[in-house]
Image (cartoon, rainbow, N blue to C red):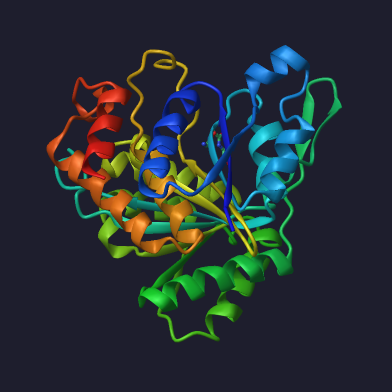
Length: 325
Ligand code: GGG
């Protein structure tokens, strides 16, 4: 049966890197049916709605979704889209690539980020003029689900797990997250430890090679993965997968990059590596591996976009990757 891929470029450089990643998918696996849909600041301006119902329904029914970036409307777009595909894990691999000037070339780790709650659960309010609140939600069931995912991921690859938390301050919420993750970890033959997320941020910068799988509450995973992007040459290199039981949504970790949007020089690597993760989620492992190899070979020999010190356009890098495929 033909597999349907929802393609939602979103805003800013999402509109430049998603077509590049789609071209890579079309080249490597010609049998997919692609369906495009709109979401984000642009469609909100035009219609009043950042996430039209048909876009949400498409993501909920497609076999997989390729997403670009969301800007001002991120909370109204990415969070509901991640819910639409029932994703509970946000997987963000971070690695240094040969040929790319990385502040720490030893970096090779993956963040497994809780994707449904924490401070991103959406319980924010203005309770009085000048007074705002945010309720942080942590449940045992979501903590157990993400911890089990992280430990299974680590067990398959024979890697250790570090549990990130701030349970010394957020004793109830991160206390529950940590206690649950430790309990789940006890079921696995996987070495694990835990770390206060603030100290972990420093240690990640100093010795990223000490970390393999980092299990994080929602906000910590978002922030620490961006921090780790700085160790490998920037956000243009980080793909991600939002994983659920039945389907996934795949997106570069970067946002809309308004400073370069429209100039045709956005780095398509993160979107292409997200496409490789999409392929693997649909059991097209060989195709996923081919994309990864073509992207890595292009990073090694060029052309490279300006964020990596080159002067190539998005189109030139895409042509190079597609040529290799
Ligand atoms: N493609 C990812 C994106 O649009 N990032 C912008 C953003 O605000 N991300 C928050 C998040 O990933 O939770």
